[in-house]
Image (cartoon, rainbow, N blue to C red; front, side, top):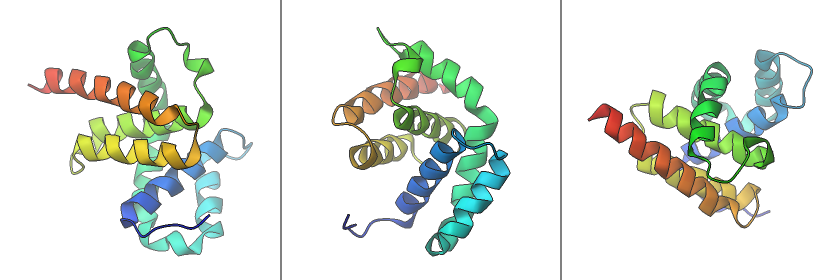
Length: 143
């Protein structure tokens, strides 16, 4: 697949998504999965700190994020959501709630664009709708 030039944070998000996805199927601990992933992709060393930060945030807040996501699903069971989409939704929730230096609209846009690459044709719209709903609730709580 030919990649266009894009922001290093996009590469970092894709890396975090891949490591988080891999961790779902590994018998290794989450730190071991992340370390092995980073060692396997030395070209991502520049983005290492952001990959680690996002990965750890999702691992730490996964249960909470899942509950929040479930509260925004309409006529869907979380277990039926594609696993890549689950990971992207968790990442989006963590960025919105815990990474104040990233505008939520950027987070939503990035998760949508990554879904277009790695998930189904319908996933980008689905992820956009859920994260937009999460963000609106977040705004109400903050204001």
